[in-house]
Image (cartoon, rainbow over all chains, first blue to last red):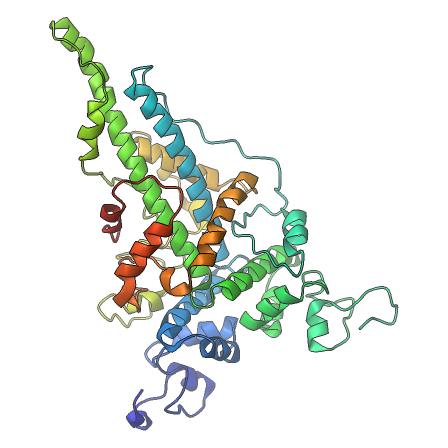
Length: 160
Length: 295
């Protein structure tokens, strides 16, 4: 925002926090006053100070993307306090797996048909649910491996 | 720092805050003392007080799952500071789009072969010579336009549609509508599985179209608990180099999502992203890539 921001209305963050919106306010470019709920959600889940620290660590040209992703995650967490946006990741990952299997089976079918070996087969039935790892009923596709600890060995191995 | 009993050390959260870890500590079961990095990531993103607030708003039976998702989200954010989990979602969505397009293409080819299979007997009856092989159909159908009938990615309503993300792109629409009906131009969002399984009854009845049948199977499978499929960990491990070799700026796939504030370089980014996407045999990735939205 320009130096004439003194005359313009404060950003949504400063309005929410009831403080003066300075010209160098880090939130101002990304939390316009017309979208108060955006900051409210982000503040509720992550906190203004955490968001400020995160934005300071990110290059300026990427801050808008960072804010938008935080807003998305905050809204997802508000709608689903248990899984947040991770629920969507899990569903998408399963779709990828299913699609890949379907594609492999259909490709095999196509090759069979292309060489006139046999009529095309019907798509394979979906795989039955596995009995293993149903304690949580949730799939975390991306295993974050911390070399300094054995988080995955415990939390994923124990709960999954 | 140990308790007076001397048998249990403080959890990572209490260690960090330099306070006594009481037996009723909410975070102790989820942040063992040796998982300092995990706690730091969670604390950096959410903060201890916010995590405790989330847990207190939930039933105790849900705490474990909530903490897993919180730790996961924080760890992903640590790895991808700009896009976080949203980046993972978009990458998966892009994979699904590619797979769907390839699947449609293969189905079209199969249909051609089926038709040929039916025509050959009639040609034989008419005394016409059958073709020597069916491979010429491959070149014929490869030029056919892929019919995007119905896809997994856009078939359902948006679950976590963010009006803030959309508002930038949809003609500066400033309305703060947080409803789930905002699925006009954003094919990124999918329906939450629990919402889908509760409401989807009509989808399961469509069996005329094989794609719809597959989709109905998918919806049915969504009702079942998710399980860990270890072979997929392999697939996902293959993505790890992908995540490692690119930075956040190249991470995103261009689409018509409203989330393209950095879209000046999106064309270049997406081209690079295509090159980095593994395990796809699409011959015309560039053509597929030009499909910025699926409707």
